[in-house]
Length: 598
Image 1 (cartoon, helix red, strand yellow):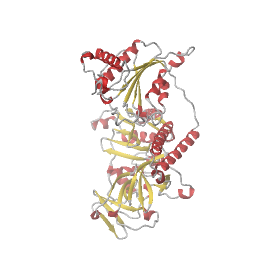
Image 2 (cartoon, helix red, strand yellow):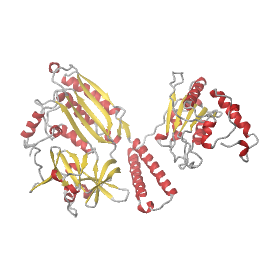
Image 3 (cartoon, one colour):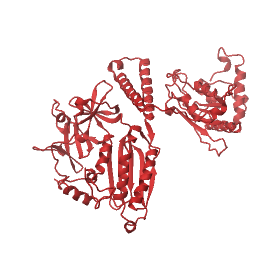
Image 4 (cartoon, helix red, strand yellow):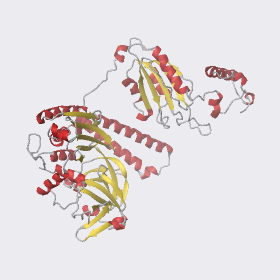
């Protein structure tokens, strides 16, 4: 601390202004008169404590008081919004600062008040003028504009950088949340509608929509895919990386963020809620219930889950068949059978959609009799689907019911048991690059889960290297990856290699053998095995290295390579190289692994 007269070039009225500020703050806080305090000035780092601004509740209290004041000025057709801005530290470099948004909002408001949090502002020694050090700013807005029109002011910010909440006009109990923050005095701005403006048109909050040809939307999506590839190429270019220039690095980082935002927004254009499809299923359930004479109740969950429009059109038929199968096959034949099993007379069918590990899952569950594994095995042996000496897991046994023409129905009806059934569902889902998982407990019920990618144009894949080439394995199929110990790897003459993994013997697939690549042959324990789930069971794909995991844009390979069943498509990497996407269901070894008991 230094004396006031020791500081050079201070304005003549500096001391008076300082005392006035202290008096104003002291009057609001009820603290002792500033004239009793030591007449000194603190460095910039201690200004908050010098001026008495270190009040943990001040930010939240001021926001609450502002909201209450605006409620008092509220008139019909107006809206009160609470807006929180949490701009990234690089926002100034991207051309955004807090005052820009205050000005934009003030032009549309009857009243606009803003509050700043300064808890992270550094000292002058570490202060950077081009870096945003304000962690949070709050704005309270009274306006006739709709929420959509207010959101337009922040369309170039990232989703995590702003939050808008509409406040009810009627007063409601307010809970004060204690936040350890330092706040600046509020900044207020008042604006009036321009003469002749039609406030009634602004207050209706109607959304504007436009119909677009899906072909044009697909073209836009393809163009954005190319943009993503080009951006990855720039970001991963070795020559550009060697340039040690802060402005170039900052520009590339900004380009990456903008590209990711454009990609997310364009993807959202193709996403629609699954509500309409679920509504159609309600009628299917009613009609099937009448035909079978079974009383049941339908539970629908996750109707707001969004899915790619191109996929939704292909889901109706599989869903209809699974629901009919659940009612006809899954639920008990009559009320007496359900009562004997200790269940309610009314059966329950649950239709649910939800997100799981970057995929969308649509499941159909029933509380019926479940799947009889012994009956399924016997039927599969009779039809020659399996030989009878295989050691199959529960999921593999349940998967047998999806073989073409497979049915365990004792009697043929117009709903099921005609040999045209779940194999059609399986084919339809596989065309969407998805898979079906079946869980069942005898006497308790069955769940069919359709696991689908978020979109058909982008795939989440694991990049692996084998024989000097990069391949992509869809993460939807990956179970785990590991480096095996030498004692769990075995080889049989004229049978091939396999690895013992928790009681299962998995065939080892060498990609160099599948694609006839010239490479030095190493032992499995010198490489890495990727365990994947296929329709025929689990296999272990041998690779040299795990490169990483990323989302890639799928590209067709043309008619010539379309005949390769082991490949489902290609993708252009950031380096400009082309990586092939593996179709794991077609990587079947020319061997038969021994049984787990051997």
